[in-house]
Length: 266
Image (cartoon, rainbow, N blue to C red):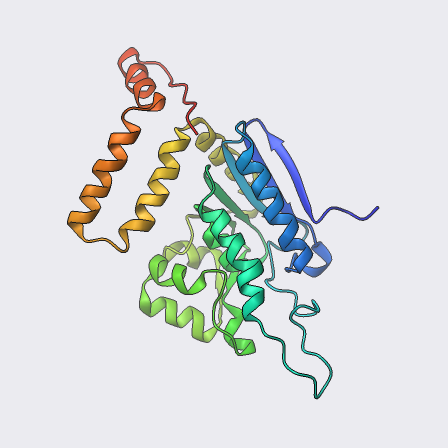
């Protein structure tokens, strides 16, 4: 039997999903899309999961779209060109929407190359931790395309318009240390420390108030479109809801008793 396209592993409440096309640098095919989305849906529905990790098998995180996939590969000379729009709508859009709406924090553990859609897949996650030898490449302009997989939305929000333009138009390789320096990712660590760093981070996240972390993601994303007064009102509404939940009451009780809290909301 062939290897599964997504490897699933668990460490306590942390679920790790590993892209498993190492011979193709984990580049996307339609089948890989469907498997990854299905595994994300399973993690979202599993109440025992409190954090998800996205990783890649072999030498890379993800090299983006597999250009040999019949879905996008140009046909024989003289045949009509492929329409890439439906590919984005049917495959990439649902994947991005699922990651950004996960009911738990999502961490990308990046080693090797993260290029094109692979780079933006990582950036869709809540936190990105990369090994020092990793690199991020907005490779789209090199084949006459624009950043997809939410790249046009993510890049200016993460690093500002000037750097977003430079990354998107030039398509230069960005080292993990430079990605950390400009605020594109959360942290760059030595390659040998990547697994331990991700494990410690995700175990910490899994023990935190999950519902509040997810509400924080949503509020930060929404604030990009709000005025100050609207953001203040949004904060009041979210605090009103969270303040009546178990985790707030548990957090205050634990603080008062000088003990570790036991958060359970999701």
